[in-house]
Image 1 (cartoon, rainbow, N blue to C red):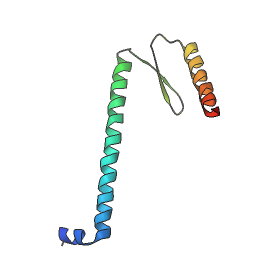
Image 2 (image 1 turned 180 degrees about the horizontal axis):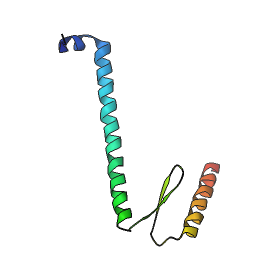
Image 3 (image 1 turned 120 degrees about the vertical axis):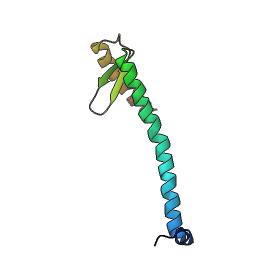
Length: 88
């Protein structure tokens, strides 16, 4: 039969429960804002406020008046800026 007092008496079990609880609390505080972030970005996309360009492993958000050619230039500039940043 399950007895809560037995769990508290064993330090290793109590430690495992505390660690699991901390991990759950921290992961929830990270996951929920990302879910809300995605929800609001989708609303902005549907309202035409932002333009979404899907890549292989990333999503880029641009102003709706950015052309496809300009988005290619912006993408390449960002790559080159990362190289410059790593050189410093």
